[in-house]
Image (tube, rainbow, N blue to C red):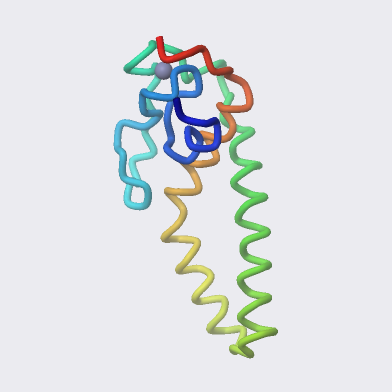
Length: 120
Ligand SMILES: [Zn+2]
């Protein structure tokens, strides 16, 4: 049995922790943003109600805001890199991690609301 944390970062179903949340298993290079509507393993619904995933946007926002602050802070204050390069690097890193952040935020959000029901 996987732990809740493993299930979140493996992007698997919160109810059975086996079925995938997303049809494309790629973590970084999936720009289709499609999500399974039901778990292929236990048939748990991933679409709880209309607009359910708006909450995931706030998780994504909080993560990227704190990450950006820490990233820019370290590069500017510790490595003394010009802020113009820091902005460029930050944009690049955020762009490359966008699909990952999108998926993990949705995974965290649905794990808040759906409890583990066994492997079924
Ligand atoms: Zn499932």
